[in-house]
Image 1 (cartoon, rainbow, N blue to C red):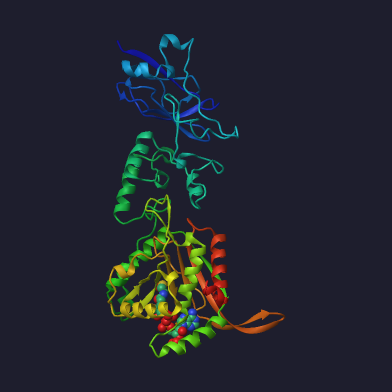
Image 2 (image 1 turned 60 degrees about the vertical axis):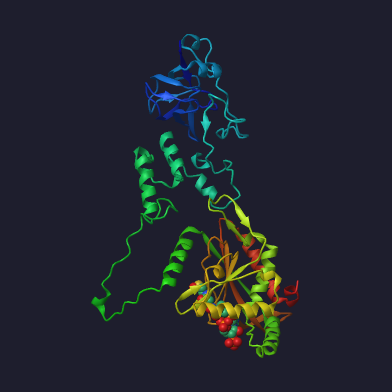
Length: 460
Ligand code: CAO
């Protein structure tokens, strides 16, 4: 005959009087081994207590708000025979309980005893509380270890805690919803199933799931009757503008951009460019500073491969590219296009200049194919032919950095005790701060500046 066993609060790491924040089962429920029975909340962590074996819940002895300690009775379960044999140590029959209380496996303590235990010592023994491995569920842990602590931005998220029942957590996991991003409408901000559903609906409807509460908190776009104030003309956006606009919008909203500014002395480069330009003008090849920029970027990307990389779709891995294909933003009458120049590291300045001329002409004649615009690992956007001293380019996702080039101008530069006129080129590097740290970006632009100011390095 099946035996009724007590399931007791296991070792939860020296905490006493811990609040029950969720009861996931009721009398009559069939449970499987490891299915969450209740959730407890210390001031440092949320802990799920799982069923040590499969069976049918006979009685639930706790309710939300109760305070429990190690050894306290949670539920009684009529165990299926095989299950009871499989996990005898985690429970005690009512008769045994007084003399032989629970033997749930203890969980590992962190080095700092004031910190909560963060993970089972090895695996998750039957009957041990399942401390959430999801770092987002660990609360109050500015110093709590996070599996991905190296990635900027995640530390912040790991400090956000979502109150939600195990079933809601399970539901969110199934839908791939990052729970800390969902605003809870339940008691004390608890996230309900409806909240998760609404979050998904909103994301599908074009709202984004990118920040606390997504974009739902924004005011609607102003709908103004401009004709009330004077004559107007309505011009539909071009197809290219619509497509690039949607991409730019996503990239701006989803990538934490930072822009690093730099200035480099291209006096020598300009003298050489002019020489080369005169030589190749006869062949109808226009040698502009951009060909040098491409080459200098290829050299710099080789030195800093993380800038020639992409986050994978799950945001878990950085894919570093071993090839150097660089996109170049081209301004066309219909909008912005970004053809890609391939294997830049393997080409010389003249060949790059020739290709640049060809692709920008094809872009303006609307002759680029989709393949011409694919495969880039990094982008250069040059407004140097037009003007300006600096700007903040938007990263071309899923790339992680883009270089903006502004117009070079003569400036007095302090050299060897005197001001000398030098041609200075302004650079603006926007980078994805989830992948690239500020120090790395400053090293990148400093290196790039050196390559551009020292022609010998371009030959390396
Ligand atoms: N500083 C000073 N002069 C520069 C310069 C710089 N950084 N870059 C180019 N120039 C000069 C060129 O040498 C050329 O001079 P000359 O006519 O006297 O020979 C002139 O400016 C025009 O250059 P260009 O624009 O024809 O050629 P390019 O290789 O510099 O650029 C291309 C090619 C296709 C990138 C460019 O035409 C273009 O479309 N730029 C706009 C890109 C853009 O819109 N970016 C913004 C994206 S975000 O909205």
